[in-house]
Amino acid sequence: MYEIDAAKIYEPLHEARGKDFEAEAGRVAEVIRERRPDAGSLLDVACGTGAHLRRFAGLFDRVEGLDASEAMLAVAGAGTPGVPLHRADMRDFGLPRGYDAITCLFSSIGYLGTTEDLDAALGTFAKHLEPGGVVVIEPWWFPETFLDGYVASDAVEVEGYDIVRLSHSRLDGDASLMTVHYVIADAESGARHFTETHRCTLFEQVQYEDAFRRAGLAVEYVDGLATGRGLFVGVGK
Image 1 (cartoon, rainbow, N blue to C red):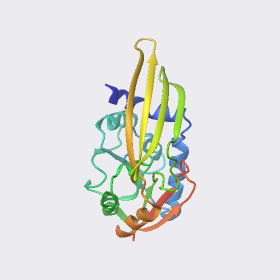
Image 2: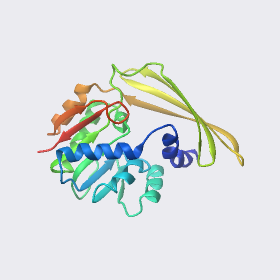
Image 3: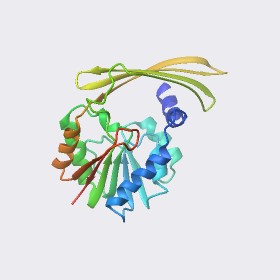
Image 4: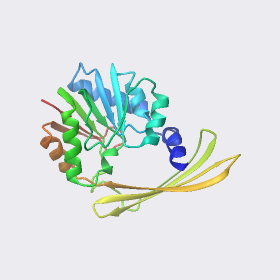
């Protein structure tokens, strides 16, 4: 029950907190076309509820999405009718066609636990890339930019619900461990509370870059884009 509810409120909640999916998708499209002007096809890996994917659909001739969560894909499918969606792990999926661009945004790459996982994902991306294609990844924080003990809180109104979101992040070995508390209330059901825990690896910049290179991609880090975590941009041969 809560997973479905969380998936449905995911996009409007983050928009209410100030995230601009449309502007981010537009900037990523610019980054892609600066390196591949004729890019017409795009695969959005870890597409979630389709927040970026829906915007990409207006910017590219052919878009597809991929995610490991059935609940997220159900919401994405309702919002992007006619767009092919694939349920798969980003480390080892196999699709029948290639793409001019592959994206992995909102720091979803951080959910990978090891550099071996990172290598597997970048290798899989590269296998699905058309010649001269572009891979764009938004990283999670680097070890030196992560704030241990960081607390964030928001109170917003979304889809008829009043929602309080409170998160606390702490260092957990080579990763961040973020616990998020939600209190969701509406007139019919009253208040409900649930929590989510997110463990994201604090890969170093050089670890990302090495994974791109091992996948055969020329890589650069573009600072300051997206949410301030920048973007890694790789170009195939």
